[in-house]
Length: 178
Image 1: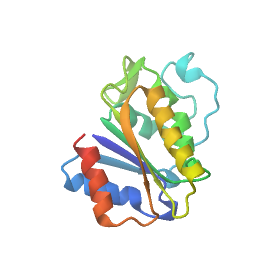
Image 2: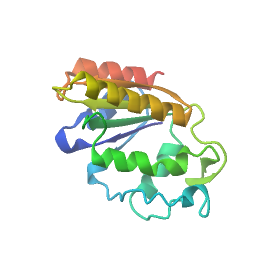
Image 3: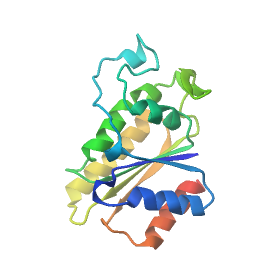
Image 4: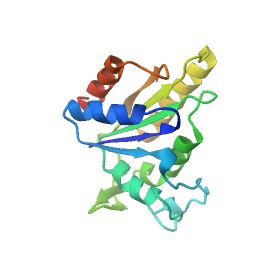
């Protein structure tokens, strides 16, 4: 399963990628981060200690985390903001700590002790029309650092705000058949 989490505030690229990956034969789950009620990470460390694999914050991430932990590919889609991602996607990234810990996996729809992310690929798709080299480099570096932390493979893509369908289809094909 592929999980696409996108900030659809400035376009429908996440939806377009979902449809293209579906046409490529992949099973896809899509979340529009800008429509979810997700609070920022409290950096309390409970997910790695006291509540072990469970975030103490009760919000829509409780629906998203098991899907992330059980996917074979995770795709985050956002406008590039100062070389990073939108605040909607940043909240998702921060709250993924509970599944980023290698001691957890999904069993029966619940996070349990074990290895998560085995065989998972991690992709980021950034959009922007007038990105300077510093912003482009920062976005690519952010992806590479997260990929290293998660100990997974993957790729980052930088696109114009309104990419043509062929570009979307090519990315979807790469993700679906990786």
